Amino acid sequence: MAEETVPHTRMMKCTLEVEPSRAYWAEYGLIGVPVSKDHAFQRATFGSKTYMRVERLVADLRHRYDAFPPALEVLGHWHGMRPDDRVLICHWHTQLADPIYRRFTGELMVDRYHHGPRPTVDSEMVVRWLENQVPGRWQFATRSKIASKMMSSAFTAGLLASNRDPRTIRFPQVSDQALTYLVYLLREVSFAGTLIANPYLASVGLDSDTSCRRLRAIPAIGFRRQGDLIEFQWQHESLGQWAAAAGLLDNLGSRRGAG
Figure 1 (cartoon, one colour):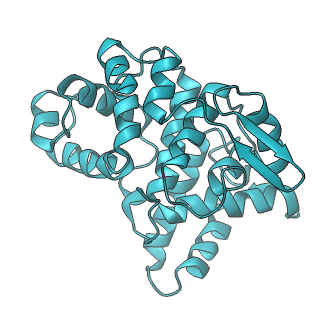
Figure 2 (figure 1 turned 45 degrees about the horizontal axis):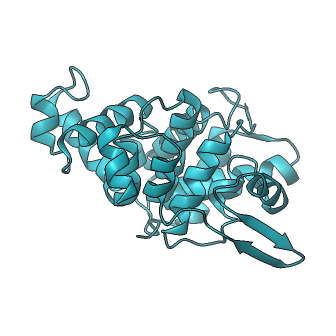
């Protein structure tokens, strides 16, 4: 499993999609196999959406979740997930699946927050930034649409205080449960960075020092740091085993996670 590295325009059609993601996870948990567009439409998984919209949602949600089977298995059986955790999980999976959104939220916004003249972003700035990221690849209208959708997604994720320019950058609260999910997931994924310094953590305000402090307080991760040396004494073999041990999964998910 690896994070996506090729730029694409999926963000134009699908933003964070928190409620559709929740429905998609639940449907996968019920049937135990990949959710097809026909199945989702017939079962009204996403409510009264048109077939074309269902087709788009299934294609993009597969890209975000089916590409990481251990995560989808956990998400399909996680009962009682806190709404704030759900939003962050959708944000991180969107980052995994979209390198431009990952750079936007995990690099540009972080740099603007800490080093910019003002901790804000706006449409014009993000459109220019997109051209620098992928010179000559997309027309202005495409860049404008992607910029708008990325900022809307960041707003939904709690990374922006407003959905109108100029948009003030802020960082959301991250629960220990959501943080543990992310770190156990990244442990099984090929990505740029380390488990204490990467765009996923940075996007929610966790730099390496803050990450170390947070991770040290989570027994399931077994994190230790001495000088430049870091060590993880993982208490569980996988994301699924952690989720089962933490009592997050329904009965079927608990049996699969423990296996």
